[in-house]
Image (cartoon, rainbow, N blue to C red; front, side, top):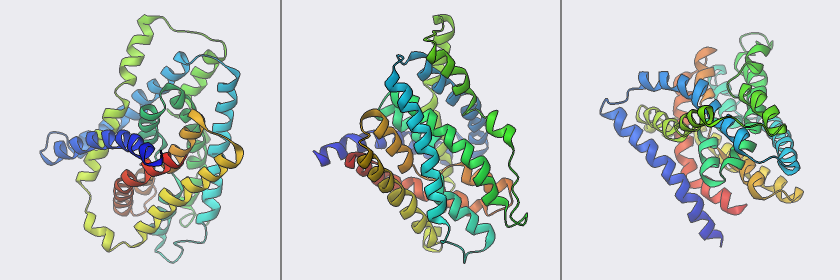
Length: 310
């Protein structure tokens, strides 16, 4: 049964990575450049992913279990990041400041939106997307507070550059503020509006993986032998984090759609925000790009195993 589950989960992961491979080919042949991918990232971030989250709120049937699951997902998301922040504190401190922050950020923060959401959608369905949106909220809250502090503390004598407006007015948070009241009141949208929302939402997985493929195409994978700390980050992010979450889920008796969603988000490879934050706050963006790409490829193996273990 374990290996059967590995194969089932592995099939969904491979399907997503085949889309990414098409992105690699498109980038190598000049059909889809990294500059174009960066512009499409804004489209994905500000339009398509919010549409996917809204779709889950407007199409999922209201129940007390779903409300409880949503609250548990937010709480687990916050706890997951808090545990990761504490666990990673003693590590990578001997690296250069602009590299140390990249390693720590990549080890802590998973790609809940661009990788987690498509995989949850493929494995669990709209109920999983509903719970995943709650984890994305916790990710946005922690990454724009602790994450920004982590990226800037060496340059600002430990002081944070937290922007509360960016936390609240965030494309990963705003759709929940819109969709949650509608879900609680069992409101529905007319087909005239819901059909375009569903159509736009359906672009989430393909576009996210095509964009990811362009970043893989531009990565020097020989660097992994020069940057030995990247495998250490992968070990923490892809093995330690999901095993800790798996243990917590087993102890608390959480399974089903909620348990699978929480495990996938904890097992997701390093977040794309690692690259964006590194560039924005003058850390090693090249190292961040290498780390995210390498760790994402390793997750092809680790993700199916973690899902099957649950």
